[in-house]
Length: 372
Ligand SMILES: Cc1ncc(COP(=O)(O)O)c(C=O)c1O
Image 1 (cartoon, rainbow, N blue to C red):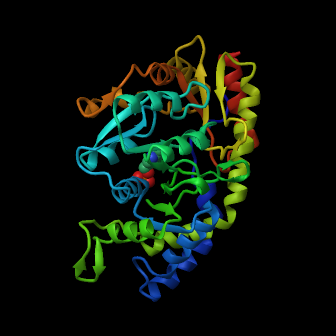
Image 2: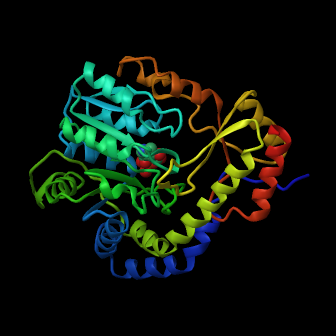
Image 3: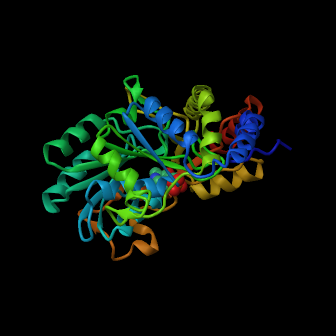
């Protein structure tokens, strides 16, 4: 019986930094450095430098980062905001939480990101002033520069949901470097995953940085006077200390995940699947191994792999427009046939920092037996 391989295992990542983090936490506790403080500031500077932006504002999680960014971008109740029909639910939620109306756009069948042509057609019908690009699955759109230019020329404020894209580069530069306003999630399962929830908003515009920083701290002007109605989305010092210990390992983490993702894609060439990966010019971060099953039901393949000791996931099993709480809350300009077909077939194999060569060999052998 083959060894069992989990879909994700965070032990290798926490083991990398545990001893140093405990020292840092002891120091922070003795200094009563609890919420915000120097570690959060240092993390913000490190993230901004690493992601090619002038400013990063740390916040409680990637979902808050999106709401902060959309609010700073001027989204108001009743506004239309375009976003891809294939993304994590939080992208939709952020728009809905602000009382705005999501305009769901289909994805490109090759890179699985927002389809620029579909966005352009939707814009002819719904003159939205805001859009969200999501850099999904650990890479980014082949047409990202065109998308940014399209939005700039039409005065559409483009917010980039970078929750999954830490470590992704486009023509050698961090993919978020070209964004006007972008977000990051440091949820534990992410490539730069913390030991608790965490997020950040990135920008090079000082006005947006000040606005986001104020919104994340009750809209404060000073301690008891307020410029905005914000909320509390501050980051704890403990979260920042953990991430500061992890950051020096980020290149090694990305390199290892990227290599493992490439090995899966090479093996998948002989399987009855389509394997997805970054388009030309983009280097992925190995966040996910994304396959679509060609002639077998993805759920049945998942079951057969489980019988062989390999856990899998299906990211995502439904599109946004198919989610029950979305009903009646969005605009769809045309049938999202590409995203709907994708979700019926998608299958993800185990991919995490510390996936050993033996574990990956087990997965590949099991997948070969089921999919060859
Ligand atoms: C695309 C996308 N957007 C937003 C989020 C929300 O991030 P968080 O879980 O940190 O709130 C996630 C993460 O789960 C995500 O994958």
